[in-house]
Amino acid sequence: MTPKIRPERSEAERLRTFARRSLNRRGPLTENQEQALRAALSDMHVERAGTELIAEGRQLRDPFLLADGWAVRQRLLSDGRRQIFSFVLPGDVFGFSARPDALAFYSSFALTHVTVAPMPCLPPTLQQACALAEFAWDMLSLEESAMASQVVRLGRQSAYERLIHLLLEFYYRLEAVGLTQDTSFAMPFTQEVLSDALGLSVVHTNRTLQQLRREHLIETSGMTVRLRDLQLLAEISDFRMMQSLTLQQD
Amino acid sequence: MTPKIRPERSEAERLRTFARRSLNRRGPLTENQEQALRAALSDMHVERAGTELIAEGRQLRDPFLLADGWAVRQRLLSDGRRQIFSFVLPGDVFGFSARPDALAFYSSFALTHVTVAPMPCLPPTLQQACALAEFAWDMLSLEESAMASQVVRLGRQSAYERLIHLLLEFYYRLEAVGLTQDTSFAMPFTQEVLSDALGLSVVHTNRTLQQLRREHLIETSGMTVRLRDLQLLAEISDFRMMQSLTLQQD
DNA sequence: CGAGTGTTTGATAATGTTCAAGAAGCGTGG
DNA sequence: CCACGCTTCTTGAACATTATCAAACACTCG
Image (cartoon, rainbow over all chains, first blue to last red; front, side):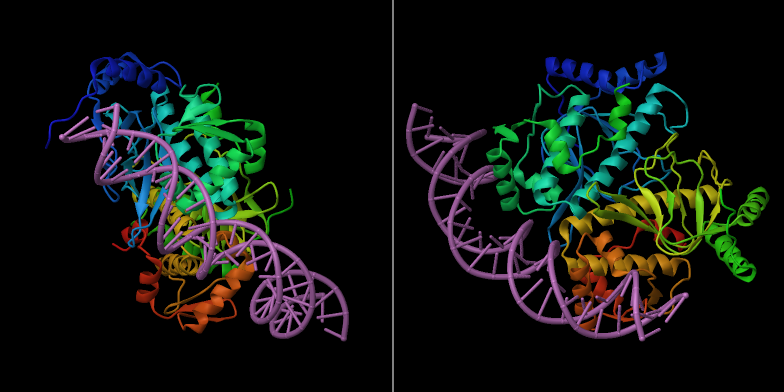
């Protein structure tokens, strides 16, 4: 067991604040929860891009908060193809389930350097009515809802629509945790990742991105994207706001 | 409110027996549960093909047992395209969620005449450790696992692989509730349904089916299918047994 | 028998993949 | 600071897969 890498001190402070705000989305925590949360957040550590955070088939025991970076839920086929199911964004909690003795149907995989904190403080049975439990349910709800979107994209949308739809999902989820600037946000990974999420070849993803740029629907510079007309993009891709996000905005 | 159509008497008896066996998959029920179950099963009613059993967005309150017939979970896009997420097979319970105040992310829709029975007897919080609760968790687990399979099929498999993979899913799920004969089973719906599940055009689904027949991988007659080499089919489509099914076989 | 629905067929078009190679970007070490 | 190697992005051309359209055929049910 190699010693865990810790985030740099000032960075850690920023992330703790971010994490605390994120977990508060459903309302203030109790004194006990605050204390447990502080303990958990003091145990943040960094994993490198490419790390498998949770292996497929493993018992889903301890939840983690993703304080920083991007991760995905994915599965590898026997011939090396990869399918990404959904994305884990900063502020999300992953690696748990309401089911007792649940096994992971897919592995969780770090796309970038990630900072994660174990969250043993999440209400284990999820049955108590408290802000933290509601937050946990929101996470599960989001996961389910994102999965449904993913199926519709893959099954019934063109490459063009799929890409737009996914970008909108990113935008609104990041916006909910304050990680957008105006209508732009960072997408810190390669086009291959997009491809494996959208069920496309890298080449075609690239060409579709170019088309969106040509049509002035998006702008990119480096790894940040700007969406130029949310309304129009939503119409093109038949995008519906995810319920668990609208809930969070009350 | 039109009066509910009841199944015919002798048919009803058969279905009750089937339903009881299905709910027993995780072990015998308590006396109380048996009694509640009897009450529920006496309230079976029939819905016609094409009925929306649960509308998208509705509160997921009361679980139903599908005693007979086939249903799907689906969503309609604004332009009329349809995506089927997953199938509800006889013996399955649908229309519930572990989440408090959960909303349906998709509508449940009867593919055939269906016989359904309300299941208010399902442990509401799902937290008690009993055979019935375990059964309920198995249902949720199956739904999740089927959803993951669906994403992989749509995202990373060819039409040919997708179709085989779905047929295998049907086979093993039906086999678990005793609705197969040898390696054949009834698939009582049109190719359009398959297409909307697999994200293909009807024409292409048809041609792919023909190919499977030509290659002697399947046989069809009327609406029943026979899989001719489970092993080979599983290899071609990278099929993995769904965990919630293997559990049921203990 | 006739209407309606589902299946099959052929022709053609659109969408997306593969392969191969060049350009651009980026971190590393000299 | 540059040179190098590596990865990612981009491009073109050929090809494969899947969709669309239109029509014929088959089956079922009244």
